[in-house]
Image (cartoon, rainbow, N blue to C red; front, side, top):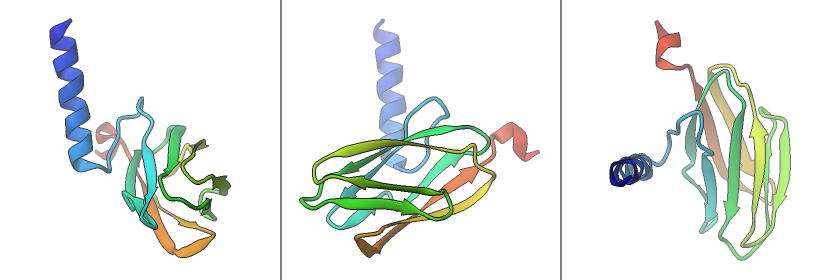
Length: 117
């Protein structure tokens, strides 16, 4: 049991350190903090449906919007929403806060290592 816990802690620490890449079975998260998206570029696997959590730590509401992903959802101040995206083709997909268009970011869909050959 201790080995499983240590492995899970190691994986979580590695993901926290990189902050932008996630395994297919994990829910990646974007955080709105100090009027910016953290991270502002998020890597997800191409070809699979992805559950994305958007958390708003700011004191005002925001609107996660993406023309590329056909998504638009208001995130209350201090709230969070879950949206599903994909399956996506490999590429870059822009998003922004429609209430403050200076807040922008990218979702990067990358093929699995086996698909890159």
